[in-house]
Amino acid sequence: MRSLFHLSLLTLLSSLAAAAEGFKATPDHSPQPGVPTGRLIQMPAWESKIFPNTTRDWWVYVPAGYKPDGSAALMVFQDGRGTTTPTGNWRVPIVFENLIARGEMPVTVAVMINPGNDPSRPANPAKKAGTAASNRGFEYDSLGDRYTRMLIEEILPEVEKQFPVSHDPAKRAISGSSSGGIAAFTVAWERPDQFGKVHSSVGSFVNLRGGNAYPALIRKTERKPIRVYLADVSGDLDNPFGNWPIANQQMHAALRYMGYDVHFEFAEGYSHGSVHGGSVFPDALRWLWRNETPKPEIVTKGDLGGDMTLHRLLIEGEGWQPVVENIGFGDALATDDAGNFYFCDMRGTAPGIYKIALDGTKTRVSDEVVSGLKFGPDGRAYACQGAKKRVVAINLASRAVEVIATDVQPNDLVVTRTGHLYFTHTAKKEIAHIDLGTKTLRAAADGIANPNGITLSPDQGTLAVSEHRGGAVWTFRVNADGSLDAGAPTMAMRRPVDPKGEFLSQQPPPYLAAASGDGMTTDVQGRYYVTTALGIQVFDPTGRLCGVLSKARADRSEVSCVLSGPGREYLYVGAGTAIFRRKVQAMGVALVVK
Image (tube, rainbow, N blue to C red; front, side, top):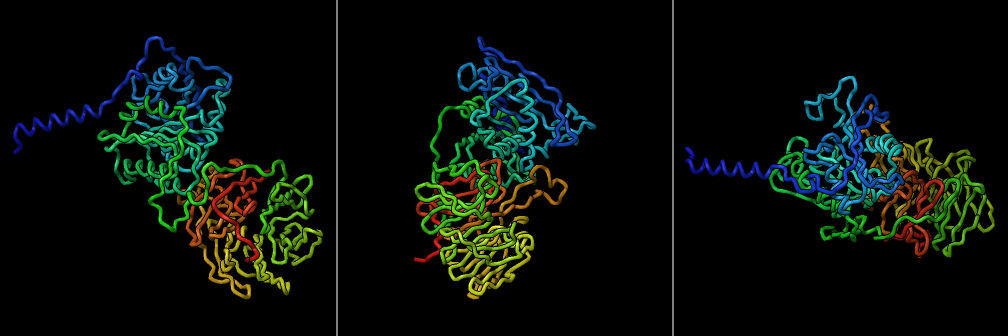
């Protein structure tokens, strides 16, 4: 039997714990004398087209001092109703007013939006969000860009009809708690060109709908220009979907590893909810909206010697820069051993092959339109011409063209130092081989899901081919007679999740689309580069994903890439009507061995 002393001690400790769990209001949570107030406007219920058969309540807060000139900042809040109440734990309008008045955050319009509900089954206000009628779990916890698109394509244009705001991502933030926290991160992750700041409290970065993948994705994706504030508590959830405190610690560690501007506010005690997050909310806003631009801190002491991480490829401060703009469509990127860069403008006013010399001089060197281009050991440019159903060799000095094969529809090609040419026969789902000595054409491998890009390892003993309709890069052993064997899908490309809702009806989740593997190249260290729907994916010589580079243009797919330029140390990429490049810690492979 416990003594009266022990029972009294337990009662005291329980009381102290309950006090620690309580919401701690600060002066920023209460109206202050002399601080001007803004307007909280309930908007008409929104019926979404991106989430069919759903309607949602939402509000817009317009602060005092707002000017309709597009200069105001923007912050979006998930689970909007709870952020509007003046006696709740968030009290967004009041906190905004106090911080704006002191200049601790800019004049900011707030959009508070509830998750959608089935209009035929209205949500019960007496119950928490997440009832049977609510679309909350699907909208907030799912990966992919569906919820992001609803905000950007539906909600924000409606806001700007009355209240124009800045389109600078540094002046746009997004916030949420629990599943709303992961939703906020997903929006900025998918569209950093739209949202540059994230606030997440007790974020559900667990396996509710695949969100537990984020720490791994972050470590192998080029750092995005977003600032992230995370808050969690030691007493957060631990259930069949995961451990919330550990998941948030993993998120923080991954973001730190990649050099993000990140803050993690972790408190002992408390439980899952808004008590702690609401208490520190004013400080979170001060940190999120601060003017400081910190230098990225990247700590790689835990890396193994053989790990070809993005840190060992990318150069801090070196981003994509345009090389050629306002062309019809750039493809067939290539290089010669000197580092002169070549591409084909396939749809411009003057289509053909162009050369950009090391001094920057641009010259049209052929009027042939090609989709794949590589230099052979004889110095000629070998090319694919699908429209003319042939493979050709072009002497760029004389512009003489020799037809190598006809009645084919080649997509891309490579040429070996020993006189073997391989091209992807995409429609036939095969790799074709041409012996350049005898002009003999034969099928070398088949069964690939629309083979597209193609490249060789530095020693030319391995041929790699990307799938356009699948999710793998295949590798083959190249034999002395030009035959291929030992084919296997050795590199798993990352694929978009549920793009534009096209895969909603497919099972099982997470509704992965094709990777859209396209052009490929290799560097002297044996890394493979492949353009995909997500950007350029880089693999090490063993087939492990090193990481994904950001797209040169968020609105365009990339179709071809090559290492060229001075020292062959610049990675070039074709992105529709423009070509970009960036300097990297890599060197392109020379055709001629010296």
